Length: 132
Image (cartoon, rainbow, N blue to C red):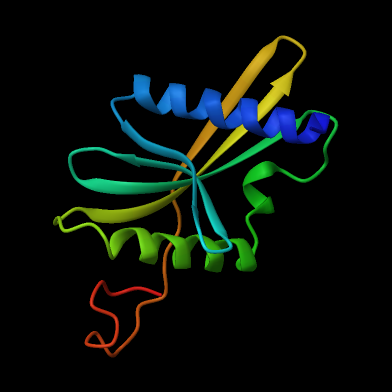
């Protein structure tokens, strides 16, 4: 496994641990559906939270939260749709990004709640859960 992949896995673990300390229940880490993956699926009393974790070192120029491009957002939405099709509860959904920076003096995390929103379709009958 590459150093980048190892850092990514470590970042996901640290983000899940941090979310848990904030009162979230971690449902899954690295949940896969078809060709899509969601780094963390968590829940609290009101939301299912689908989290993309971006782990970087300070030597990187692009901020981790800016690395969640349109294609990644579409894939997360598709995976969340598959996940929610198996859930039968009234919780809302939310897409978050957690940036994990490995810095000289430790780790810095930034949590971006509602980092992006799914596109709502007009025809709810074709898509009963209301998003792509």
